[in-house]
Image (tube, rainbow, N blue to C red):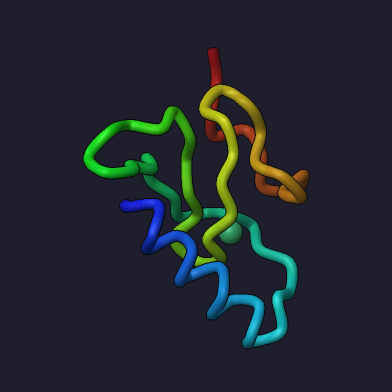
Length: 66
Ligand SMILES: [Zn+2]
C-alpha cells in the first residue's frame, strides 16, 4: 500500500470514531515506489516497523515471529 493511501485510511478511521483496531489485515507500506520497512493496517491505517508488534493490538499480536 502507498503511504498516501495509509494517510487516507487513517483520516477515515478517525472520522468514524477511531476505535480500537486489531490490525488483523495489513500489508507492506511503500512511499514513491520504495519499501518503507513498515507495515500499514488496511483497516485503520496505523503503521509500525516490521518485526515489532503493532501498536495497541495486544490481544491480536503474534502474527510476526523471528
Ligand atoms: Zn488497524
